[in-house]
Length: 334
Ligand code: NAD
Ligand code: LMR
Image 1 (cartoon, rainbow, N blue to C red):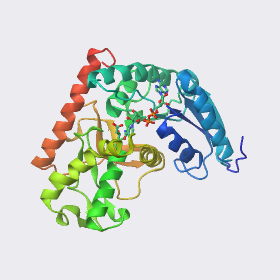
Image 2: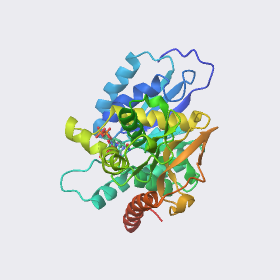
Image 3: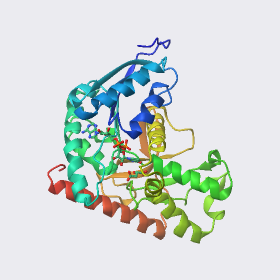
Image 4: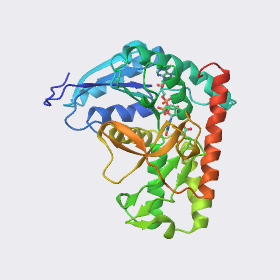
């Protein structure tokens, strides 16, 4: 146990799949204060499947070896009822990866077996204000499964990660316009964390200039959008493994902005339950532009939607509707 010099009470942060690749980057960033602030002590509550507990014990040894001042305690378990007990934040990273020959429906079914009991456990034992981020793929529909199995929690407490897509979209635009990433504002990721996502530059600015005045329309439609949407596959191809450090970094960004708020006038994108805004079917967990304040998020309203955007937004909503229909057939959601 490390000394903690903060006067704040520790908060409980549950992480599933904690011995995996993303966990190996994520836990150290949370424990060092990157997620909730340099004055906020944390208790990590780590969930793994039984065969991975030994590897997890090794990760915990390393966490302790960092002597992080903010790390108040670490708990490990293979039981979600233990790992989610009183959790203020839950990052659901552990999921069944797609294997050769698996269809989308097989993956949804396999992950239903993980996210249904985890939703039920969150419902029973987590803090009533828990903030849940689902990272494990298919993230949006896994978030829907967990949410629908936690009827005593507010549906808005369940979110899915499109932040990695947003960070990729910002970085690609920065490179193209030879601007620092800090010059780029209000890029949006609409929809699913999948290749149907819509990285939208229609509201984006670079040093205050509309981004679409600075780049060629042809490049935007035929290079930029597919590059961002297929970046995950490109990384798997290059690295022989899916993105991990960048995924962990995006999870930190998502939770930090949700907990601590976005800067004045700035938006981020989060996968959140649709309230019907922008004609997106209610209930789907869909990437929207949001502002956050005081631990709450709200959708940025009143944006113009061109015919091009409408087509892209509807296509990714359609994919999420199909995913919902599949998990509904499996009895995982209403
Ligand atoms: P990984 O295989 O290295 O680690 C996953 C870990 O989850 C493993 O240690 C495994 O034992 C554990 N696990 C499996 N079932 C579990 C359960 N029921 N409870 C607790 N733990 C369980 O995978 P990774 O590279 O860390 O990626 C994790 C997930 O994140 C994958 O689904 C991946 O596709 C997804 N991902 C999402 C994004 C995104 O932007 N949303 C980006 C990258 C990766
Ligand atoms: C990513 O976007 O990097 C991952 O979601 C890719 C994947 O399929 O794991």
